[in-house]
Length: 203
Image 1 (cartoon, rainbow, N blue to C red):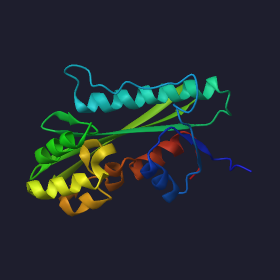
Image 2 (cartoon, rainbow, N blue to C red; image 1 turned 90 degrees about the vertical axis):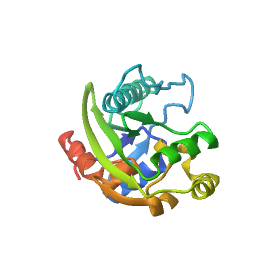
Image 3 (cartoon, rainbow, N blue to C red; image 1 turned 135 degrees about the vertical axis):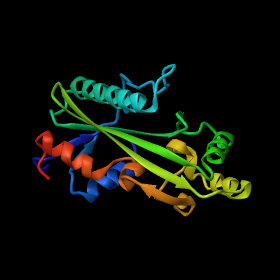
């Protein structure tokens, strides 16, 4: 029997699943690409779009698509949580690397620099969507070419915004973090819990 406070999580990120479990949120996965009709979100930044505007737009698109999936599949109506994380350095968005060379390029840029990690979270209840945006600041120690290449060869950077995982091997590169650690992982827990409570989910 499902608990009364169950939500849908529209994300394939195992990190977000772990974080929701950490704060006792019960969820079912709502995967947008499971079956026909396949629904996807174009995550290409628009010309001249700031990172803040971009991440808020993408999480809203994900939320709208997830609502569409729930209705098309005639699933039980429940709150739907979506999230999106992006890394920005000097106003430039660093998404997920397309290949190893791209990961090396990103990590070389981050070496010895401070950057922002933006995570937007949305909870949809019916036609109402509430959103929150968190900003964290991360500083990398200077990295040499060998360190970067060895890290890339682990495979860890390849599906991560900015080409690194704060909770993984890359933790040894981070000299300073200000803001939400869980937000850098992909789901700011305090803000997410507050948003869920505002949407009637007991925690």
